[in-house]
Image 1 (cartoon, one colour):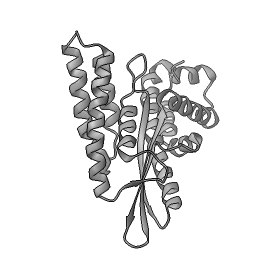
Image 2 (cartoon, one colour):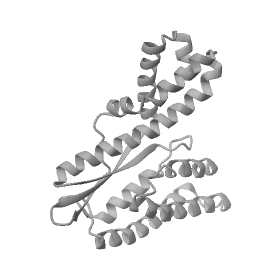
Image 3 (cartoon, rainbow, N blue to C red):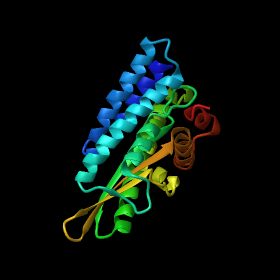
Image 4 (cartoon, rainbow, N blue to C red):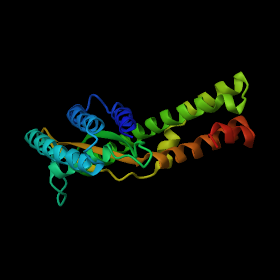
Length: 237
């Protein structure tokens, strides 16, 4: 189980926007988590409950340290929100949540925007974050389709058309996601009349794949006229 968790943690984290300052700082958390999980492999006496508590304690410590740095850089939370350190702690813990099979429970993406008001910046940041989420979902869907093309017994032309449809599905997937409530919203003033907004969006991995299947299935049926048998096999059903 722990080996699976290590792999899934890496797969989920590697899609972070490397140009995002917070994403770079997340690398510290990855090191902490990996050390905790590796320790769990080596120490059979330590229960999973104790490992989770150890991970939480280290995450809290790191979150407080990072919150101080971000506050010095001018970042603040929305009025009435929980403290920044708690926001970061909750976010980091959510990023490494796994299901009963050891698979990553959530995919996540960041959105960043600069605008003249908080509301405008927030809206832009969320839309950009959704596009990043849709890109991750599209990538997962591409992997699923690629693995099932052989089973669907498609012609070379059909296979190429299927790939093209999947690759063009990003915007449709983003639309299908609807509004995604950010896990956090951070703000800081830029100059005299600009505000920078950062958000992080999470989406259930299984639900996101079901949305992608719905979108891609409809496109394949409408554009390529594939029969139900081929569609079922492509979707891994």
